[in-house]
Amino acid sequence: MDSEIQPFENQPVTADAGLTQPGPDLTPAPPSTLHRIFVGPQGLRAGWSVAIFFALFFLALLVIAGLVWVVTFLLHHKPSTGAGMTPIGTIIGEGSLLLALICAGFLIALMERRRILDYNLRGTGSVARFASGLVAGFAALSALAGGLYLGGWLHFGPVALTDAQIFLYAALWAAGLLCVGFTEEGFCRCYLQFTLTRGINFWWALGVVAVLCGILAPQYKNESAWGVWFFAAAGLLPCLGLYLRKAQHGSFWYAAWATSTFFGFIHTGNNGENWIGIFAAAAIGFVFCVSIYVTGSAWWAIGCHAAWDWAETFFYGTADSGQVAKGHFLTSTPSGPVLWSGGTDGPEGSLLVLPAILLILAIVLVQYGRPGATRHSVNRAT
Image (cartoon, rainbow, N blue to C red; front, top):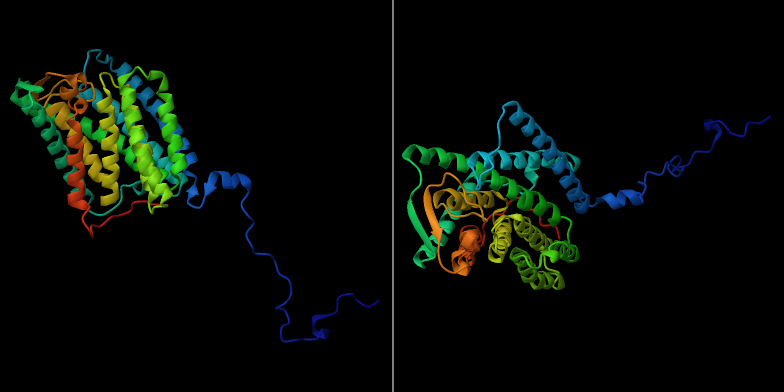
């Protein structure tokens, strides 16, 4: 019986022999629906990334808080129940938040196949930008305190510390408030600003802002909630204009609107805040976003944030977001109408804070926003 398959040598040979034979299909299979839900062109979608990040952060914070409790229990240390902030309490509290933030950032960076510095912490001249931010923050708060003093809305008393205590508390408050700067900027201007920039549009930003405003709706009698609402409303038309013009880098500014509103939102839990102070927190958050756009990283913002708080909390001895610190250098007392003095909120609750914020904006734009200024590693996905 003849074989159905003839030997190769008995088959006719043509010029294209072997070239027209069907081969395996190497076309990659289209991604599944589940894959498309979680993964986009830039990797893990921004919304899922944010959700996982917050879950990781709170899990890490829970573990760290447990460890702190165990240590304090073993050392028979009782936390202070007195009013006001203390430098040690700030170092422990903000240091725990910072450690949880670093843990969550490291894990989410592994999931996204990034490095933690990719979250708006890259770029040359980081030390110089950080130092420049320190100078700007101290100068702006000093200008604000000077304006309040000249207007008769802030009175200074004698130095509150001895010579030895001045240097000790200056260093302790520097450490604690550096943790504040790294934690709050790490949340809002590093991770959130970077992640939302690569995955947000106008409508998603509007949704985020609307949800934040809606959460505060039952607190309409709480003055601080109005600061969030005023800032949210102030950003609506500019962002809508960017959307209608299909502006380049629009997603960066949508993200800035959302993260700055969130920054004001998280400050509403502070005691003694008024609507001006909350609006100012959101507004200065937006200025810090501008600093990322023109410098290429968040280092300037971190320095400015830390120095502003250090000058307010330690050097001038004023209330900081409604909280008075223990171990401050100068003593000060607000006087006159709350609208101008800030009252229990401190200088941030005075209308004069708005020119101070504009001064910070002017400093960063003059220094880094000139034509030809270099901008490094800012994710400006459109």
